[in-house]
Image (cartoon, rainbow, N blue to C red; front, side, top):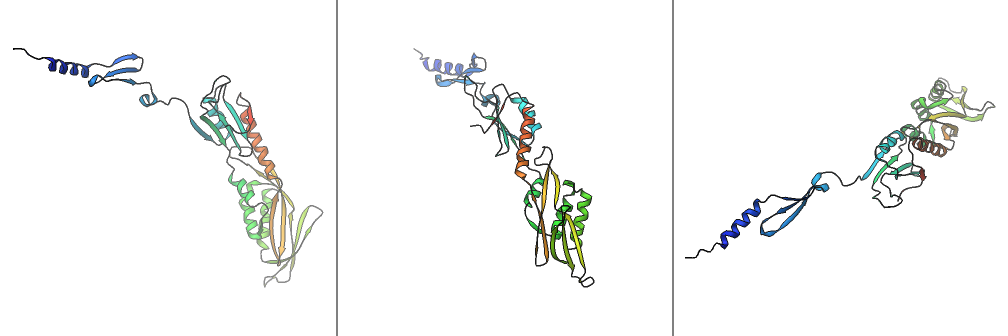
Length: 271
């Protein structure tokens, strides 16, 4: 009697294939043998297998020159490119920029995006606006730390004078030879009705502001603005060329960065 062993042989071969150990082709790569004579290559060096990105990518945003320099020093190389945009108030480093001989991804970036301080925003918001006496007095009291000349103590007295004369009828405003502004008024309360008085305040005062978080401080000149409407005094201020101060502050930030890196800083924005 003849025994057909072909089916048994094929079954043994299948079991042997399933039990076969992976065969290494090169470091990190293996051939894996499956049933049905299918051979798969497993690459253990891919980002998916290792959990490590193939390259650096993404944009990191910082708020001051010191933070920019710290991150830049860790990731930059001799081909890194840096751009300063005065309109957007940003400094951008393309850390993996193209080299002179070969392209790169240009996908790893560092951006300094300056953020204006609350004090700066508040002074700018009220710039050129006329307010009632009490509101203007409260604004001065809230911003005494920024007042330079006259000093905070003098400006506090002025604010209190505004509050004390909030219920009078103003008749005129006169510019004095000393550069101050004098306002004449008449009392309208029952106890002091008809009594006249004068309120003298500086026509020009100086404030000190930090435009951006982490930047230096700058002095600005504010000129008094007023209007007497229906015997009521409305008063405010007008800052002299605040945009120039912003430009100077940005230029100083860029210069701080320039002092800490080797690459030149170009005027513009990266592609």
